[in-house]
Amino acid sequence: MIELDFYGTLVAASLVLLLGRGLVARVGFLRSYNIPEPVAGGLVVAMLLLILRTFDIEVRFDTSLQTPLMLAFFATIGLSADLASLKKGGRIVGIFLLAVIGLLVVQNAMGIGLATLLGLDPLMGLLTGSITLAGGHGTGAAWGAVFSEKYGLASASELALASATFGLVLGGLIGGPVARLLIKRVQVPGCTPQQAPRLPRGFEQPNKERSITPFSFVETLALIAVSLLAGNLLNGLLHGTAFELPTFVCVLFVGVVLRNSLSALGLYQVFEREVSVLGNVSLSLFLAIALMSLKLWDLAALALPIFIILAVQALVMALFAIFVTFRVMGSNYDAAVLAAGHCGFGLGATPTAIANMQAVTQRYGPSQIAFLVVPMVGAFFIDIVNVIVIKLYLTLPFFAAI
Image 1 (cartoon, one colour):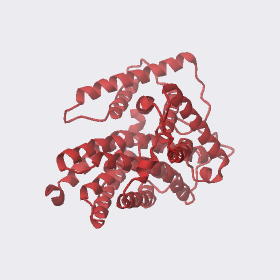
Image 2: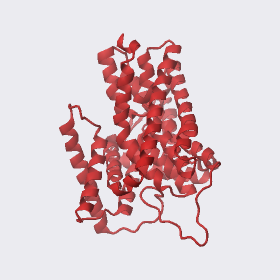
Image 3: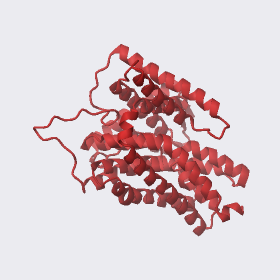
Image 4: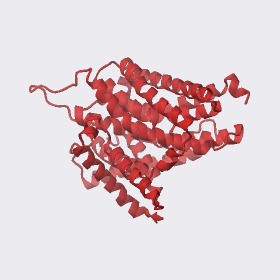
Protein backbone atom coordinates (compact mmCIF):
# COMPACT_ATOMS: atom_id res chain seq x y z
CA MET A 1 0.00 0.00 0.00
CA ILE A 2 1.38 3.41 -1.05
CA GLU A 3 -0.39 6.38 0.53
CA LEU A 4 0.22 9.91 -0.72
CA ASP A 5 -0.46 12.74 1.72
CA PHE A 6 -1.87 16.17 0.87
CA TYR A 7 1.37 17.43 -0.68
CA GLY A 8 2.08 14.21 -2.56
CA THR A 9 -1.43 14.23 -4.02
CA LEU A 10 -1.03 17.86 -5.11
CA VAL A 11 2.25 17.02 -6.83
CA ALA A 12 0.65 13.99 -8.50
CA ALA A 13 -2.31 16.06 -9.74
CA SER A 14 0.03 18.66 -11.20
CA LEU A 15 2.00 15.96 -12.99
CA VAL A 16 -1.24 14.45 -14.32
CA LEU A 17 -2.12 17.80 -15.89
CA LEU A 18 1.32 18.08 -17.48
CA LEU A 19 1.01 14.50 -18.73
CA GLY A 20 -2.42 15.26 -20.19
CA ARG A 21 -1.16 18.35 -21.95
CA GLY A 22 1.77 16.41 -23.41
CA LEU A 23 -0.50 13.58 -24.59
CA VAL A 24 -3.00 15.90 -26.26
CA ALA A 25 -0.18 17.84 -27.93
CA ARG A 26 1.50 14.71 -29.29
CA VAL A 27 -1.34 12.23 -29.93
CA GLY A 28 -3.34 13.28 -32.95
CA PHE A 29 -6.35 11.16 -31.98
CA LEU A 30 -6.78 12.94 -28.64
CA ARG A 31 -6.34 16.35 -30.28
CA SER A 32 -8.67 15.60 -33.19
CA TYR A 33 -11.46 14.42 -30.90
CA ASN A 34 -11.03 17.29 -28.42
CA ILE A 35 -10.34 15.11 -25.36
CA PRO A 36 -9.76 17.40 -22.33
CA GLU A 37 -6.22 17.37 -20.96
CA PRO A 38 -7.19 16.37 -17.36
CA VAL A 39 -9.26 13.48 -18.75
CA ALA A 40 -6.41 12.22 -20.94
CA GLY A 41 -3.80 12.36 -18.17
CA GLY A 42 -6.13 11.19 -15.40
CA LEU A 43 -7.33 8.10 -17.26
CA VAL A 44 -3.78 7.04 -18.16
CA VAL A 45 -2.80 7.21 -14.48
CA ALA A 46 -5.99 5.40 -13.41
CA MET A 47 -5.23 2.58 -15.86
CA LEU A 48 -1.63 2.35 -14.62
CA LEU A 49 -2.93 2.05 -11.06
CA LEU A 50 -5.30 -0.70 -12.21
CA ILE A 51 -2.31 -2.60 -13.62
CA LEU A 52 -0.34 -2.10 -10.40
CA ARG A 53 -3.26 -3.49 -8.42
CA THR A 54 -2.91 -6.80 -10.28
CA PHE A 55 0.54 -7.02 -8.61
CA ASP A 56 -1.02 -6.29 -5.19
CA ILE A 57 0.25 -2.70 -5.25
CA GLU A 58 -2.36 -0.09 -4.42
CA VAL A 59 -1.93 3.69 -4.36
CA ARG A 60 -4.19 5.86 -2.28
CA PHE A 61 -4.47 9.62 -2.60
CA ASP A 62 -5.46 12.26 -0.08
CA THR A 63 -8.62 13.62 -1.72
CA SER A 64 -9.32 16.23 0.97
CA LEU A 65 -8.49 18.97 -1.54
CA GLN A 66 -10.98 17.69 -4.11
CA THR A 67 -14.18 19.15 -2.61
CA PRO A 68 -12.71 22.62 -1.87
CA LEU A 69 -11.41 22.79 -5.45
CA MET A 70 -14.83 21.85 -6.81
CA LEU A 71 -16.54 24.46 -4.62
CA ALA A 72 -13.97 27.10 -5.62
CA PHE A 73 -14.72 26.35 -9.26
CA PHE A 74 -18.45 26.83 -8.72
CA ALA A 75 -17.75 30.03 -6.79
CA THR A 76 -15.94 31.39 -9.85
CA ILE A 77 -18.88 30.34 -12.04
CA GLY A 78 -21.16 32.40 -9.80
CA LEU A 79 -18.77 35.36 -9.75
CA SER A 80 -18.70 35.25 -13.56
CA ALA A 81 -22.50 35.35 -13.85
CA ASP A 82 -23.55 38.83 -14.90
CA LEU A 83 -27.35 38.89 -14.56
CA ALA A 84 -27.60 41.63 -17.17
CA SER A 85 -25.95 39.30 -19.68
CA LEU A 86 -28.07 36.40 -18.45
CA LYS A 87 -31.24 38.36 -19.25
CA LYS A 88 -30.06 38.68 -22.85
CA GLY A 89 -29.68 34.91 -23.04
CA GLY A 90 -32.86 34.15 -21.10
CA ARG A 91 -34.64 32.54 -24.05
CA ILE A 92 -31.62 30.42 -24.92
CA VAL A 93 -31.27 29.30 -21.29
CA GLY A 94 -34.95 28.32 -21.28
CA ILE A 95 -34.66 26.29 -24.50
CA PHE A 96 -31.54 24.51 -23.28
CA LEU A 97 -33.21 23.74 -19.95
CA LEU A 98 -36.10 22.10 -21.83
CA ALA A 99 -33.61 19.95 -23.73
CA VAL A 100 -31.97 18.99 -20.43
CA ILE A 101 -35.32 18.01 -18.92
CA GLY A 102 -36.05 15.93 -22.01
CA LEU A 103 -32.81 14.01 -21.50
CA LEU A 104 -33.62 13.35 -17.83
CA VAL A 105 -36.94 11.82 -18.82
CA VAL A 106 -35.30 9.71 -21.57
CA GLN A 107 -32.48 8.50 -19.28
CA ASN A 108 -34.89 7.24 -16.64
CA ALA A 109 -37.24 5.65 -19.17
CA MET A 110 -34.29 3.91 -20.82
CA GLY A 111 -32.84 2.73 -17.51
CA ILE A 112 -36.15 1.34 -16.22
CA GLY A 113 -36.99 -0.26 -19.58
CA LEU A 114 -33.62 -1.98 -19.95
CA ALA A 115 -33.61 -3.13 -16.31
CA THR A 116 -37.04 -4.69 -16.79
CA LEU A 117 -35.97 -6.44 -20.01
CA LEU A 118 -32.84 -7.80 -18.30
CA GLY A 119 -34.84 -9.08 -15.33
CA LEU A 120 -33.49 -6.55 -12.84
CA ASP A 121 -35.27 -4.49 -10.20
CA PRO A 122 -36.70 -1.34 -11.88
CA LEU A 123 -35.08 0.65 -9.08
CA MET A 124 -31.70 -0.36 -10.49
CA GLY A 125 -32.78 1.10 -13.82
CA LEU A 126 -33.72 4.35 -12.12
CA LEU A 127 -30.42 4.36 -10.26
CA THR A 128 -28.54 4.00 -13.57
CA GLY A 129 -30.59 6.84 -15.06
CA SER A 130 -30.58 10.53 -14.25
CA ILE A 131 -29.87 9.92 -10.54
CA THR A 132 -26.23 9.01 -11.14
CA LEU A 133 -25.62 10.22 -14.69
CA ALA A 134 -27.01 13.75 -14.60
CA GLY A 135 -26.89 13.83 -10.79
CA GLY A 136 -23.32 12.63 -10.27
CA HIS A 137 -21.74 11.09 -7.18
CA GLY A 138 -23.45 13.33 -4.61
CA THR A 139 -26.99 12.76 -5.89
CA GLY A 140 -26.23 9.08 -6.48
CA ALA A 141 -25.01 8.54 -2.91
CA ALA A 142 -28.05 10.32 -1.47
CA TRP A 143 -30.60 8.34 -3.48
CA GLY A 144 -28.65 5.12 -3.01
CA ALA A 145 -29.13 5.47 0.74
CA VAL A 146 -32.86 6.13 0.22
CA PHE A 147 -33.27 3.06 -2.01
CA SER A 148 -31.45 0.87 0.53
CA GLU A 149 -33.34 2.10 3.58
CA LYS A 150 -36.83 2.69 2.15
CA TYR A 151 -37.03 0.11 -0.65
CA GLY A 152 -34.55 -2.50 0.59
CA LEU A 153 -32.42 -2.47 -2.57
CA ALA A 154 -29.17 -4.28 -1.75
CA SER A 155 -25.85 -2.54 -2.53
CA ALA A 156 -27.67 0.52 -3.86
CA SER A 157 -24.99 2.96 -2.69
CA GLU A 158 -22.15 0.93 -4.26
CA LEU A 159 -24.08 0.65 -7.52
CA ALA A 160 -24.76 4.39 -7.49
CA LEU A 161 -21.12 5.35 -7.00
CA ALA A 162 -19.91 2.91 -9.65
CA SER A 163 -22.51 4.19 -12.14
CA ALA A 164 -21.59 7.81 -11.42
CA THR A 165 -17.91 6.98 -11.97
CA PHE A 166 -18.72 5.33 -15.29
CA GLY A 167 -20.68 8.42 -16.32
CA LEU A 168 -17.86 10.77 -15.32
CA VAL A 169 -15.41 8.89 -17.53
CA LEU A 170 -17.73 8.62 -20.54
CA GLY A 171 -18.91 12.22 -20.18
CA GLY A 172 -15.34 13.41 -20.62
CA LEU A 173 -14.70 11.09 -23.56
CA ILE A 174 -17.73 11.50 -25.84
CA GLY A 175 -18.20 15.29 -25.70
CA GLY A 176 -15.23 16.09 -27.95
CA PRO A 177 -16.03 13.52 -30.67
CA VAL A 178 -19.69 14.63 -30.71
CA ALA A 179 -18.63 18.27 -31.16
CA ARG A 180 -16.13 17.28 -33.89
CA LEU A 181 -18.87 15.49 -35.80
CA LEU A 182 -21.27 18.42 -35.51
CA ILE A 183 -18.74 21.13 -36.34
CA LYS A 184 -18.21 19.48 -39.74
CA ARG A 185 -21.79 20.51 -40.54
CA VAL A 186 -21.53 24.17 -39.58
CA GLN A 187 -19.48 27.24 -40.41
CA VAL A 188 -17.04 28.00 -37.63
CA PRO A 189 -17.06 31.74 -36.87
CA GLY A 190 -13.76 33.34 -37.76
CA CYS A 191 -12.28 36.78 -38.28
CA THR A 192 -11.60 38.31 -41.65
CA PRO A 193 -8.47 40.47 -42.00
CA GLN A 194 -10.66 43.56 -41.63
CA GLN A 195 -12.18 42.33 -38.37
CA ALA A 196 -10.48 42.52 -35.00
CA PRO A 197 -10.74 39.27 -33.07
CA ARG A 198 -13.01 39.37 -30.04
CA LEU A 199 -11.14 38.96 -26.78
CA PRO A 200 -12.04 35.71 -25.06
CA ARG A 201 -14.10 36.01 -21.90
CA GLY A 202 -14.44 33.87 -18.81
CA PHE A 203 -13.77 30.19 -19.31
CA GLU A 204 -13.86 30.17 -23.13
CA GLN A 205 -10.13 30.01 -23.84
CA PRO A 206 -8.26 29.29 -20.61
CA ASN A 207 -4.79 29.29 -22.18
CA LYS A 208 -4.99 32.88 -23.41
CA GLU A 209 -2.71 35.24 -21.49
CA ARG A 210 -4.44 37.30 -18.83
CA SER A 211 -2.67 40.15 -17.03
CA ILE A 212 -2.90 39.88 -13.24
CA THR A 213 -1.41 41.72 -10.31
CA PRO A 214 -0.76 40.54 -6.75
CA PHE A 215 -3.38 42.90 -5.32
CA SER A 216 -6.08 41.94 -7.83
CA PHE A 217 -5.27 38.28 -7.17
CA VAL A 218 -5.87 38.76 -3.43
CA GLU A 219 -9.14 40.62 -4.14
CA THR A 220 -10.45 37.80 -6.29
CA LEU A 221 -9.25 35.17 -3.83
CA ALA A 222 -11.15 37.00 -1.09
CA LEU A 223 -14.36 36.94 -3.16
CA ILE A 224 -13.99 33.19 -3.69
CA ALA A 225 -13.33 32.63 0.02
CA VAL A 226 -16.42 34.65 0.98
CA SER A 227 -18.50 32.63 -1.48
CA LEU A 228 -17.22 29.37 0.03
CA LEU A 229 -17.85 30.49 3.61
CA ALA A 230 -21.30 31.98 2.99
CA GLY A 231 -22.30 29.08 0.71
CA ASN A 232 -21.47 26.52 3.40
CA LEU A 233 -23.37 28.55 6.01
CA LEU A 234 -26.38 28.77 3.69
CA ASN A 235 -26.21 25.02 3.08
CA GLY A 236 -26.23 24.45 6.84
CA LEU A 237 -29.32 26.66 7.27
CA LEU A 238 -31.21 24.85 4.50
CA HIS A 239 -30.20 21.35 5.62
CA GLY A 240 -33.21 19.22 6.48
CA THR A 241 -35.71 21.71 5.03
CA ALA A 242 -37.80 21.51 1.86
CA PHE A 243 -35.33 23.96 0.26
CA GLU A 244 -32.21 21.86 0.87
CA LEU A 245 -29.73 22.10 -1.99
CA PRO A 246 -26.25 20.65 -2.63
CA THR A 247 -23.40 22.73 -1.19
CA PHE A 248 -21.98 23.64 -4.60
CA VAL A 249 -25.33 25.16 -5.63
CA CYS A 250 -25.33 27.33 -2.49
CA VAL A 251 -21.76 28.45 -3.19
CA LEU A 252 -22.63 29.30 -6.80
CA PHE A 253 -25.72 31.22 -5.66
CA VAL A 254 -23.69 33.28 -3.19
CA GLY A 255 -21.17 34.04 -5.95
CA VAL A 256 -23.96 35.31 -8.22
CA VAL A 257 -25.43 37.49 -5.47
CA LEU A 258 -22.02 38.82 -4.43
CA ARG A 259 -20.93 39.76 -7.94
CA ASN A 260 -24.18 41.47 -8.94
CA SER A 261 -24.76 43.19 -5.58
CA LEU A 262 -21.30 44.77 -5.57
CA SER A 263 -21.81 45.86 -9.17
CA ALA A 264 -25.30 47.30 -8.58
CA LEU A 265 -24.12 49.27 -5.55
CA GLY A 266 -21.13 50.59 -7.47
CA LEU A 267 -18.71 49.22 -4.86
CA TYR A 268 -16.63 46.84 -6.96
CA GLN A 269 -16.40 45.36 -10.45
CA VAL A 270 -15.35 41.72 -10.53
CA PHE A 271 -12.17 41.17 -12.53
CA GLU A 272 -13.47 38.46 -14.90
CA ARG A 273 -10.07 37.53 -16.30
CA GLU A 274 -8.73 36.91 -12.80
CA VAL A 275 -11.80 34.91 -11.82
CA SER A 276 -11.43 32.71 -14.90
CA VAL A 277 -7.74 32.05 -14.18
CA LEU A 278 -8.46 30.88 -10.63
CA GLY A 279 -11.53 28.98 -11.80
CA ASN A 280 -9.59 27.14 -14.48
CA VAL A 281 -6.83 26.21 -12.04
CA SER A 282 -9.44 24.84 -9.60
CA LEU A 283 -11.24 23.00 -12.40
CA SER A 284 -8.09 21.39 -13.79
CA LEU A 285 -6.80 20.22 -10.41
CA PHE A 286 -10.25 18.95 -9.38
CA LEU A 287 -10.60 16.85 -12.53
CA ALA A 288 -7.02 15.58 -12.26
CA ILE A 289 -7.57 14.37 -8.68
CA ALA A 290 -11.02 12.94 -9.47
CA LEU A 291 -9.83 10.98 -12.51
CA MET A 292 -6.44 9.78 -11.26
CA SER A 293 -8.09 8.44 -8.08
CA LEU A 294 -10.76 6.52 -10.02
CA LYS A 295 -11.02 2.92 -8.90
CA LEU A 296 -11.47 1.35 -12.31
CA TRP A 297 -11.80 -2.06 -10.68
CA ASP A 298 -15.16 -0.87 -9.31
CA LEU A 299 -16.31 -0.45 -12.91
CA ALA A 300 -14.91 -3.86 -13.82
CA ALA A 301 -16.90 -5.32 -10.93
CA LEU A 302 -20.20 -4.11 -12.40
CA ALA A 303 -22.49 -6.95 -13.32
CA LEU A 304 -22.80 -7.38 -17.08
CA PRO A 305 -26.49 -6.28 -17.20
CA ILE A 306 -25.67 -3.01 -15.38
CA PHE A 307 -22.72 -2.41 -17.68
CA ILE A 308 -25.02 -2.92 -20.68
CA ILE A 309 -27.49 -0.35 -19.33
CA LEU A 310 -24.74 2.24 -18.76
CA ALA A 311 -23.18 1.63 -22.19
CA VAL A 312 -26.58 2.16 -23.83
CA GLN A 313 -27.07 5.31 -21.74
CA ALA A 314 -23.78 6.70 -23.09
CA LEU A 315 -24.92 5.98 -26.65
CA VAL A 316 -28.31 7.60 -25.96
CA MET A 317 -26.55 10.69 -24.58
CA ALA A 318 -24.46 11.06 -27.75
CA LEU A 319 -27.49 10.60 -30.02
CA PHE A 320 -29.58 13.02 -27.94
CA ALA A 321 -26.85 15.67 -28.15
CA ILE A 322 -26.56 15.22 -31.93
CA PHE A 323 -30.23 14.99 -32.90
CA VAL A 324 -31.94 17.04 -30.17
CA THR A 325 -29.60 19.42 -28.33
CA PHE A 326 -27.75 20.53 -31.45
CA ARG A 327 -30.94 21.09 -33.47
CA VAL A 328 -33.05 22.87 -30.85
CA MET A 329 -30.12 25.16 -30.00
CA GLY A 330 -29.83 26.41 -33.58
CA SER A 331 -27.65 23.90 -35.49
CA ASN A 332 -24.69 26.30 -35.48
CA TYR A 333 -21.22 26.46 -33.92
CA ASP A 334 -22.57 27.55 -30.52
CA ALA A 335 -25.01 24.62 -30.64
CA ALA A 336 -22.12 22.21 -31.28
CA VAL A 337 -20.22 23.53 -28.24
CA LEU A 338 -23.43 23.29 -26.17
CA ALA A 339 -23.85 19.69 -27.30
CA ALA A 340 -20.33 18.88 -26.05
CA GLY A 341 -21.16 20.53 -22.73
CA HIS A 342 -24.44 18.62 -22.48
CA CYS A 343 -22.53 15.34 -22.88
CA GLY A 344 -20.31 16.43 -19.98
CA PHE A 345 -22.96 17.07 -17.37
CA GLY A 346 -25.57 14.76 -18.88
CA LEU A 347 -23.31 11.81 -18.02
CA GLY A 348 -20.90 13.25 -15.49
CA ALA A 349 -20.75 16.69 -13.90
CA THR A 350 -20.62 20.39 -14.73
CA PRO A 351 -16.79 20.57 -14.40
CA THR A 352 -16.61 17.84 -17.07
CA ALA A 353 -18.95 19.89 -19.25
CA ILE A 354 -16.71 22.96 -18.94
CA ALA A 355 -13.61 20.89 -19.73
CA ASN A 356 -15.33 19.46 -22.82
CA MET A 357 -16.26 22.92 -24.10
CA GLN A 358 -12.80 24.32 -23.39
CA ALA A 359 -11.23 21.51 -25.41
CA VAL A 360 -13.48 22.48 -28.34
CA THR A 361 -13.12 26.27 -28.10
CA GLN A 362 -9.34 26.06 -27.67
CA ARG A 363 -9.21 24.52 -31.12
CA TYR A 364 -12.07 26.14 -33.03
CA GLY A 365 -12.65 29.47 -31.29
CA PRO A 366 -14.73 31.00 -28.47
CA SER A 367 -18.44 30.52 -27.83
CA GLN A 368 -19.76 33.10 -25.40
CA ILE A 369 -23.31 31.71 -25.43
CA ALA A 370 -22.21 28.21 -24.46
CA PHE A 371 -20.17 29.42 -21.50
CA LEU A 372 -23.09 31.55 -20.34
CA VAL A 373 -25.76 28.85 -20.60
CA VAL A 374 -24.12 25.57 -19.55
CA PRO A 375 -22.72 26.64 -16.15
CA MET A 376 -26.04 28.16 -15.07
CA VAL A 377 -28.18 25.22 -16.20
CA GLY A 378 -25.68 22.50 -15.35
CA ALA A 379 -24.78 23.81 -11.90
CA PHE A 380 -27.99 25.48 -10.74
CA PHE A 381 -31.15 24.27 -12.46
CA ILE A 382 -30.37 20.64 -13.18
CA ASP A 383 -30.37 19.47 -9.55
CA ILE A 384 -33.76 21.04 -8.96
CA VAL A 385 -35.45 19.62 -12.06
CA ASN A 386 -33.74 16.25 -11.60
CA VAL A 387 -35.29 15.82 -8.16
CA ILE A 388 -38.72 16.63 -9.58
CA VAL A 389 -38.31 14.14 -12.46
CA ILE A 390 -37.06 11.37 -10.13
CA LYS A 391 -39.95 11.84 -7.71
CA LEU A 392 -42.46 11.77 -10.57
CA TYR A 393 -41.02 8.46 -11.75
CA LEU A 394 -41.27 7.03 -8.23
CA THR A 395 -45.02 7.66 -8.33
CA LEU A 396 -45.41 5.18 -11.23
CA PRO A 397 -47.54 2.11 -10.35
CA PHE A 398 -44.76 -0.52 -10.33
CA PHE A 399 -42.71 1.61 -7.91
CA ALA A 400 -45.69 2.26 -5.67
CA ALA A 401 -46.19 -1.50 -5.40
CA ILE A 402 -42.66 -2.08 -4.10
